[in-house]
Image (tube, rainbow, N blue to C red):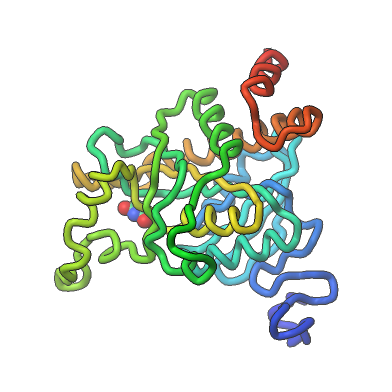
Length: 290
Ligand code: URA
């Protein structure tokens, strides 16, 4: 019987888990998921990710959260959908961390803010402007939402290896797809304080708009976990192009391959006693790969 339909009494109101450590929202427990978890927003994308795996099995499905685990090129890997936006994403990171995951890669879609970023290109984030509200309930606004160096380099290495076009830089994460990203709301509503947001963000070298990276980066940094993000630009706010699903398959392939690379780097880092990938480790890895 599922946890949800069981009417079961959980540990406490503050710690909503069952006796096996099964988490209230995601319905995952220790052992169910890998240390490496890919985080698409869309539950449908979990299956698109898992179709590249050698083996896969469904772990749990509850609300917007669908979790699969499996093996990609021999590496234990998981994927959990976060739903759209910061609050549900924070829940996913919280509960995955509690069952042992420590490395997260957002696999998303995004709107590019610069003419030079083609629809279908990928954007790998080095950090995110915290325009959402959830991370502010965790920590002061001055706290940076930065991506993990090793995870980000693994995403770059995967994109290079697969020959996929990518851009590297800052992302802005908002809590609103329409008005919060300076798109007209219903009947053209746009408050004065949102006008000029796209051009301001462009002027400070932000590449793209999406809705989850800042939350994932902030929570990962607070908890000493690792996070990165790769998004497919399905829209360009300069050229006004929007192509549904453009580049998503590439983002999925890059994220899966980044996990394989990370697992190899992690092994070498552990042997060398390093906390992040170093030029020496990359050189050794490259030699081993042939
Ligand atoms: N996701 C967003 O948040 N914004 C876009 O423009 C496209 C995808």
